[in-house]
Image (cartoon, rainbow, N blue to C red; front, side, top):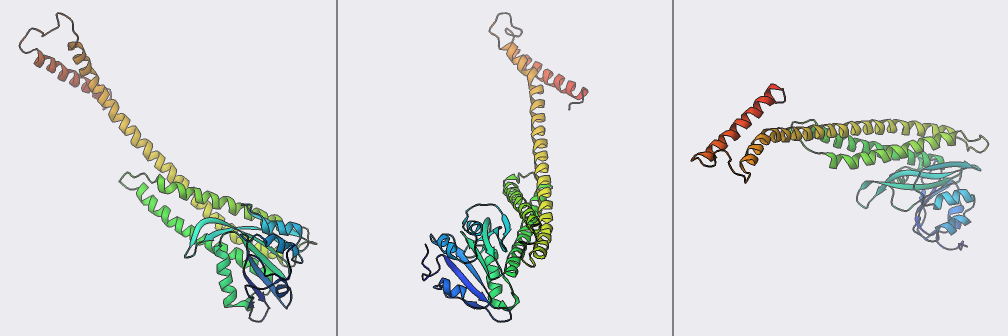
Length: 330
């Protein structure tokens, strides 16, 4: 059992936010009593690398076993549920390094009620840092934990838009090379882009589905304002998902164009090789004939036998070329 007098394990930050006034950032050494006493609501952000986080959440008042499981899971898929006036689940996001955001998929676990919002993660998450900076800049605009949750999803949408713009620019560059006069194989650049787009599209569709399903939950369990909030967020994500879907179609068409150009180039090489084979086959027969170690070969006794055989080779090449021209192959 987690000692109530011990500092909160895995604490990244904690804020007490009072509507209409400036919020307060709690001490890194704050305890359960510091979080649970006072007006307004609290936002607690935890690092799941801390081994005692699960024990702390089990002692946190207001959390159900299902919400605790959602906050401590290491599952890598989006989820959202409403139960006993609690909203909890997992959101997709982008991981963040010390100096910049990345395109690596990250997972933000959350649980919220009217008096708190708890978020947990394993790796630093881009949207959380953005929202924290916004909270510190203007705390008074956040009147409830649901607004923090809505801003987290909205910030993820902004991050998705930025990634879509970057991927669009990369596809523009690949497209210029694909449809250019110079033959270049851009599949090495295109393949990871297609893989990222497919992953983003898959996770976005999952988030849309779970938000719509949560919005259809029994009204007795739905906290006030959640249905409207989920509808707004689903509309935001639907717009981004359309952009990602358009990128997926564009990347697929580019890949098909690359395959088509590669097939055409391969066919051209095979055509040239076939022509060379057709032109050289009769001379090969001539040289094979005169190369037999048998008696009474033509020109074997004359002074210009080799020159005569060479003349036959040229004649056979000319005849082969003439036949190919007459048949329309050349």
